[in-house]
Length: 343
Ligand SMILES: Cc1cc2nc3c(=O)[nH]c(=O)nc-3n(C[C@H](O)[C@H](O)[C@H](O)COP(=O)(O)O)c2cc1C
Image 1 (tube, rainbow, N blue to C red):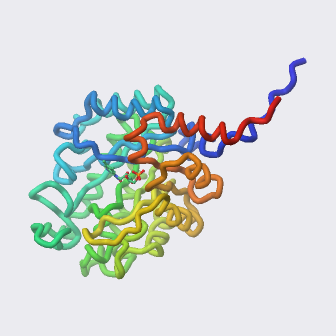
Image 2 (image 1 turned 90 degrees about the vertical axis):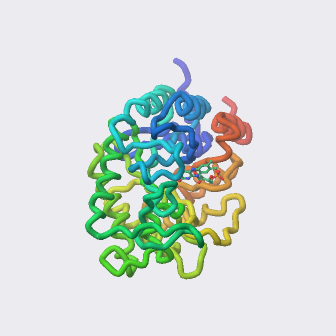
Image 3 (image 1 turned 120 degrees about the vertical axis):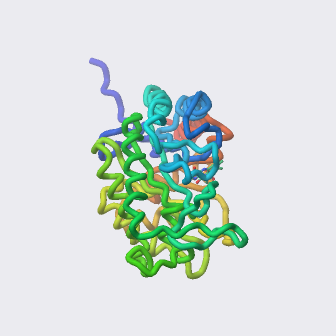
């Protein structure tokens, strides 16, 4: 009789799989953070995107979140952003999603609108306030236009699912359109979509609800937020907790916790892991899974984040640009630091 195979009790937590509510299983807790590449033409993915994301899938990540993908052509941060505002965008993105899935990575994509930070003459925003002094003022959206904005996001989500993505992340961070509604620094409306926190959260939450409703149950909804504007009188952690709780009630499965972006002059104390405490507080107070991101480059730090229950997922940006096989190296480093018991 062969001896029973011992349980691999020491498999690092960062390398343990995680099954999302819809059924997709991430092979580990390492995700590629969404990063605009500026390489698309007319919003269309091509070989560049296939190779760029494909290389990180081959390098062992559990989840790739494809860069901010515009829900409307005037919502692009730059002309080279990917788009999902038209059915033409589905097939080229399906190649990317298909490759990711075929090589063991869960396929995710971020959808967004840059609002007053868009590279367009037709900038829209909650209020006619420019991002930086001297920028042309954006056009304040009329209340009657807001259902169309919600529908842009829902339609983009539907196309993302048609392309085979298993996670759709709503971009409500970094001072883009949805964050512009959340933050009192950019939202000075006096109608139902401004004023107090509930008013400012109304449009972003309507987007989360519409995106959830537009997707089949097998596709999970993540939301990226800025946990703070890093400015007195701006959006703060308490607000982020309230928003996360409401988003969870609407079916969002994970809050991807970033920060900043509302105003050009914020003093941000950037240092390794500087946003992790926000992910931990939101996870604890709002009772929803979180992703930690920002200056997490060492496998040991990433492992501690999940072991200590500070976040469920660790997202990496620049480390994965520098080193596509970061996840494979992390696995080796962590296993060496934590050798399996001798048999
Ligand atoms: C080139 C580049 C493009 C980025 N584009 C996006 C984006 O499309 N959406 C987003 O939410 N964050 C974007 N970010 C922020 C990253 O996702 C990440 O949050 C940030 O780089 C901090 O993580 P890191 O220290 O691991 O790089 C971008 C960052 C970089 C460096």
